[in-house]
Length: 79
Length: 229
Image (cartoon, rainbow over the protein chains, first blue to last red):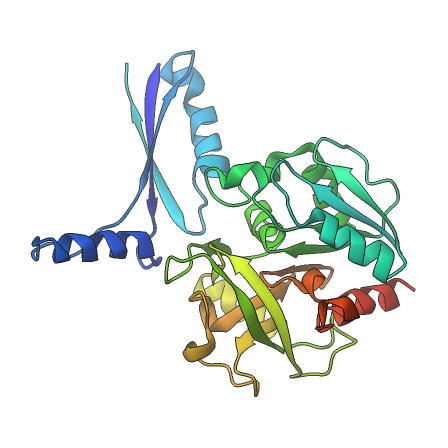
């Protein structure tokens, strides 16, 4: 099945990349853009049913895709 | 002193480290390949700088799953000395051998320059050759050296005196003005609670002999050598 893992920086973790993008948007005339956070999406294809892969996907999201010290993650289960 | 320098795909400070260990310190030093499963009776492991696995995902994140890293973790658990420099420091935090994380520099730029460091703990196995609060000049070269850690862990790190080096002025003043990358409280280097694992962003191996006209990094290797006897 196809899954998506969304990895986001925790609130309060500095995101200088997002700040630079916000500043660029503000400079180009989008003065109403107040904040930008840059996050990651992993599109993954895994063999097996949701029940059979759930534990593995959660484990590798926590151990590799996200660093729990600075990031959180959310899994979206597809077809 | 029997030392090993780990080479990951993308390591690029490995030869500098090996040179200092063997030619300057006179150690029996060798390279360790990331696929190795054996530390061959070493008493010091160095994780060098560079861009292990192309810095994909997060700096150091892929390296922690290298075969050699399970050996390094076991070695560290048993009290073996481990030094991680720059990318090596990132590998150590990603592996959980050191607390916290290293994220993108506050100013977004890759910074390559000399900085001043204050020795905040001269009582570790890596710093006895320095004086407490001594100011060193050591180069940095990184894009992701902004050290961050949660408040609870930070309090514990202070309690156990785990902050070893801080970015400072030439006179040893620690303030935001002398913080190149946004690191929490100007942290440049830390040890684990047990004191046998050191991680630092600056490169002592680049300034450890007279030829380099700056020998401030020598004390770190000399301290380890003295400790190991």
